[in-house]
Amino acid sequence: MPRPKTFHYRMQKDGYYHAEVNGHHVKAKTEAKLLEKKKQYEKKGAVVNPQTLTEYAAYWMPIHKAGVKPSTYNAYLSILTATIKPIGSIYLHALTSDHIAEAFAALNGKSASYIHKARILLIEILDSATDAGYMEKNPARAQSLRPPKGTKGTHRAITPQERAVIEFTPHRMRLAALIMLYCGLRRGELLGLQAGDIAGDTLTVRRAVYYVSNQPRLSEPKTAASIRTVPAPDFVLRLLPKMTRDCFILTGTRKPMTEQVFMRAWENYNKAVGISVRCHDLRHSYCTWLRDSGIDMHQAIIWMGHADEKMILRVYDHPGTDRENAAKTALFSALSLRNALPAKKETTETRTK
Image (tube, rainbow, N blue to C red):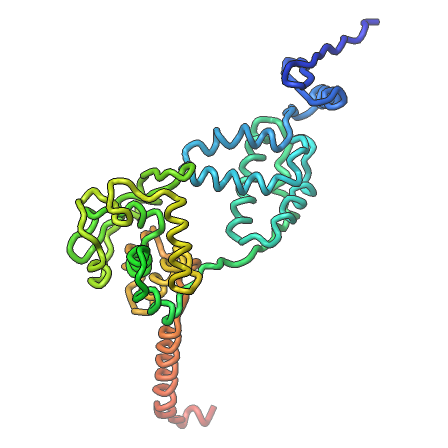
């Protein structure tokens, strides 16, 4: 009778126990964990990855999200880290739909957008692990899972009173606020705006700024549709200081603002106007006024920098009082006209029937 093979392992300088099992390099913090991984490798069925979910996610992110902007990558990483925190120490082969449900439950109170991104990231990671043979099936795709619905977006359209305060309060960030409010620019597009992008009564969005460790980086706008020319009101353009074409309008120099400078300036601006307004609230307000003014949806799509109307209708369009009153007037007018029409006369044939 052959003697059982001896299981050789050793502790290395990193403080982990290392061994070879069926041609796979395995490591664990304790001997017990190492033996557990050994047993899993020797089981029949799916090949088991010796990493926990957290370890596999750390391997997966740099490979599968390498093409996104650093700011987007960091946002994904932050969401993923928070999502898998309750279950990150579990080995891939041991994950069940109950574990995924536990992770989803911890997202209660987050926005619907945040939860959607978390769910997609988790599905993508475990799809990769399944395709590689590390798991038999993806537990994040279980039909019984019900992620929290999440809270609705908190962006809003500003009120007419807030609009007046923003227009007339003197401040170094007044111009920035008015450009976002009356031209619909995103924060990054505003930060990337140069004097040469303004011609006549229009400005053209050609670039955007994102941040890496507080330092500004230039990139193309968010999407191809984001590269656009929009009308700029005269009272906004009159606030522009004189500068050369290659200067950024918020700094008057050839360098855009750093993130900390912008955040401090915007916080100070909020105190000066006496209201709490976020950059994206101004863009939301712009879209609402486009729609309230009766601007054609196709034109609104172009000026907002979107590919179609879905985002406008789902996120940005906040029907204002003017539009609501106009709709009521149109409805009541149509009803009055209908009631004023003469009643249809009965015919002899109708009465006979």
